[in-house]
Length: 219
Image 1: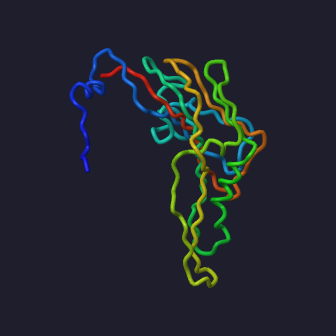
Image 2: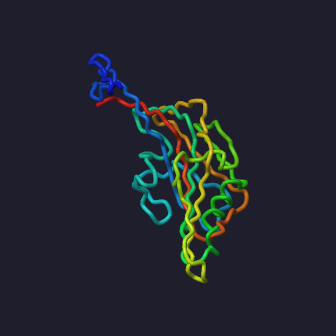
Image 3: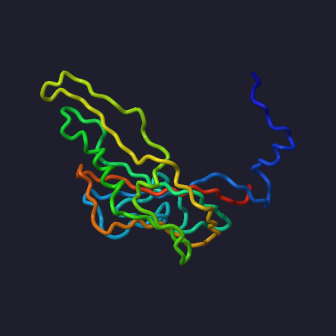
C-alpha cells in the first residue's frame, strides 16, 4: 500500500496563492437564501439582489444569507463560470414531533408542496435569459440530513415520539458554463403564479446556489 504521493516543487508552483498580478481560480458557489412565507407568495422572489449588510425585510443580511458583496453583480476584478443550479428549501416545521404523530407529516408535506408545485426558476444575465426550469424539485440541493428514521414509545395516548424528514433529491442540475464578467448584471427569479402555502403553517427558508468557478487576482 502506497502512502500519499506529494507534488514535486515544480508542480506545486501551479497552485501558488501568492503571485502578484496573476489570476487564480477557486471553487466558490454563489448563494442566496431568504424566508418562504407560511402562506406562500404570488409573483416573484428575487435572488442575488440584496448583498451582505443590506436590509431584506426587517433583517440585516449576513454571510448566513448570501455571499454577494454587490447588488446583482460580481465586483471588479472577479469573473465566474456558472456550472450548476441548486434550489434549497427547508421547512420551518421540525422533523421531530412529541407527543403523538398527528403533525408528523408537516415537514414532509411542506417539502412536497414546494417540490412539485407550479413554481418556476429563471436565470438572467444582462438582458438575456439563459435558463427557465420547473418544477423547483428538478434542481435539488446536494446536501441534506440523512439517516432519519425513528419511532419510539409505548403507543399509549400522548407517549409516542416520531421523526419524519424530507428534502429535494436527485442528481446535480448542471448547465453549460456561463461566464459572468465583473459588474455584469445577473439575477435568479423564482415565480409562483398562485400561492403555495405550507401545510405546517410555519414559515420556511428557500434559496438558490449557483455552482461557480471564480477567477480573481492572486494576492
